[in-house]
Amino acid sequence: MNVFRRLAIALTILIGSAGVAGATIYHGFPHLHLTIAVVDAGGGAANFDARHLIRTLDASAAPSENARLIKRFGAARVASFYSVFTFAVDDAVKTAHNMLIPLPKSAQPDPKDGPALAKALYQAGVTPSGRYDVGYMLEMLMSHQIHHDIMGDMDKKFSPPVNADFHVILTSAMNDYQREYQIARK
Image (cartoon, rainbow, N blue to C red):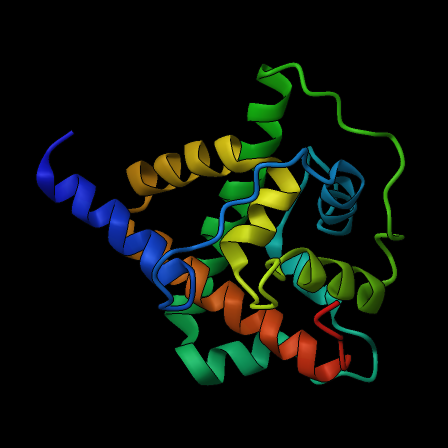
């Protein structure tokens, strides 16, 4: 691996952890019931769409997260975010299947309960030190190794800066849900 690629990966990790160096790594077993809740809330393994997931996480009374993201980041960056997010979930499901990791039949929480799912996702990203980290959340959903492998696939398909932007926008969305639903850090 050349020096520039290593630098790009390091920057992706740094930016993906909301600019905080020394991201916390989750080494435990993934929370697969939460993983399948995310997949189901986004349309299922065969039809996952990140836009659908975000609409599910929006409660009927909550302002549209999509509108907030577009206002904050612009339509082009948000469209890219959705493409990368959809690719990441599809890749994670495919990787789990290839690694013979059985995904559970039941989801927890209910994938139709947007606020409960947003709460579970946010709390999955709270590190032992009490700081929210989207990378930690992703590792709780799929394992450190699968997260690492998928980030490499995202870099190849989209580029390290686009991958980093995905992390920044997902962090922003999760922080919005934390405020909207008044989610405790644990």
